[in-house]
Image 1: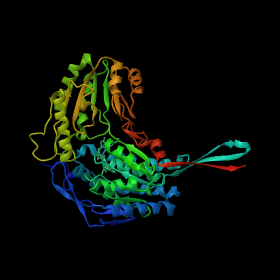
Image 2 (image 1 turned 45 degrees about the horizontal axis):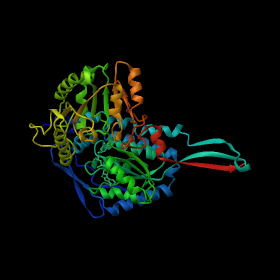
Image 3 (image 1 turned 45 degrees about the vertical axis):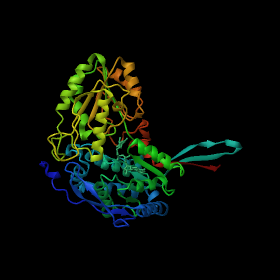
Length: 496
Ligand code: NAD
């Protein structure tokens, strides 16, 4: 494999150590696990492999920092620390970029967007700025209950210790979103990165320790090859809130495991989002961008993986989609011309290939792709894959594949399109295309999902609440809604 981007050539060994109570430390048992480059299948290096004892210490440190330091009440300190952290990460932005490409297999092109540059510009600073304008307290009108006169006020306070559990697909973006909002609101945190992508998190842990005034224990970063070390956060009574991004299956498990301690939950889960193209929509322009659905090998929770097209334009749409899939540039993720790299692991590749076989077995028509690319002998690559003649009841239309696999489903009329779009256990995102913005907006209002794009509109920013209806989750990342999720509400009354 040739490497064409000078920013992503040699990847220096990543940060091996975890961050616990302000110290960069090895695992209690001295263990380590491999970090694999999914594009080359080579071992990049190793990371400390946290045990139950390490996680226990990290939770204790966060609890202590929250309960016994001024962090939870010192808003000026928090604002300063978030700004320091942003500057520190910008100082290592190119190293972080190379690391992301190497451990995630994300195309370097995507790091200039949602993987790195976009969240780095906003995710820490937006909540830091909100500290100044947020209504931390508000007065209520005097109360006359039970013949007594009282004044009342509502006070917003941090929830306490946040367990932040991160997936591998957008590890820096999601980590920064959680750090920004949880720290701005005054919480302490234990971060548990995904085992596939530890180094981007341990690097940020080192920067916190070395280049910010964030007090010891306020942020702990605990990588582990064992998912059950993450589950400790969910069951430990010292943790107040779980901020989880990952699969719906794990989200359900977390909800059940968190019930005995009545955990506050913020769950960002999977999706199977519908892209509705009404019969008056500009099909040619729309389908020209169809190949972008393969960006980062389809490993995005909000990808529009079900395309719904009016039956009168169905054949035309399939032909245009096939042509667009043929233009997808993929291979070496360090090549700035590629929009698609490998999927993250052999396990994930086999899962995606399994779904493709399921689609064939269910009777869908495989239009293109469907296998491992013949010209790439190393790496966990899957060809851009398109299925037509798909019925919404098929598993490939209902389940999240998390690979470069797209399905096209015909609909009869607008009502049918809305019915099919909403006939899903998920409700994360969606899109509507029409010659009439008014008509597209009317359809968008009826889609049961947390975000909808109308005629190509982009809802992505630190100010834009992002999250799911139904099995796509609880709560919102970003926006003031996201900020408030990390706060408790206290009503105080005094007699007049
Ligand atoms: P995953 O659920 O397998 O793992 C996510 C994280 O949870 C990892 O850190 C993992 O170690 C940890 N984990 C696993 N089991 C756990 C348990 N029992 N208790 C506590 N922690 C546990 O998900 P993944 O495969 O890493 O990520 C892909 C999934 O994430 C997809 O379903 C995708 O849609 C979803 N995702 C959603 C969003 C969103 O914002 N809605 C964003 C990105 C990814």
